[in-house]
Length: 110
Length: 114
Image (cartoon, rainbow over all chains, first blue to last red; front, side, top):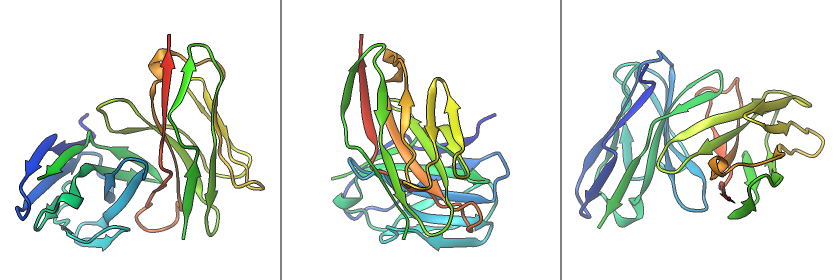
């Protein structure tokens, strides 16, 4: 019963590099989301998906892309990393308003 | 848009003390309200929820009541333990809205000392 699995747990990038944060859920939930957590600001929504093939922007989408080719997977792509993207990233899978979160990815951009 | 405001921390308490974390919200319509907890190095976990006015959510000795008249959802625990040290987030969502997007407060760090 894995729930929501995020990889990697830690990552250091150089400015300008690209990478993909992986997220997978095994609960067959339609809704999935990506949040970033910054000190004192709670979690802010980056992108979300209401089902395979359907994604939309959240509150802070700039610099990030997503896709949802299957119900299970919802990867987050950083196109050209910037120091402002240093944060902790959480993927969530949601059903009937209840969100299940992954363990998080701590990303540092230097 | 929707917003959630919760008291800033850190809140430092002694074991067996009473804990209150204030949370107020602004929303269009009738949101569902949640408290999530984040233990060190972990993701967020649902602590409790309430889906309509006057509902009381409870779990692990924590309680919160959905107060529509004051747009509040304050978290309380009568006797905290060291293991309650964590960051607590108040959040809301519109259940019927596509995506069930959560709006979070800024989080309140609680430290319980023995």
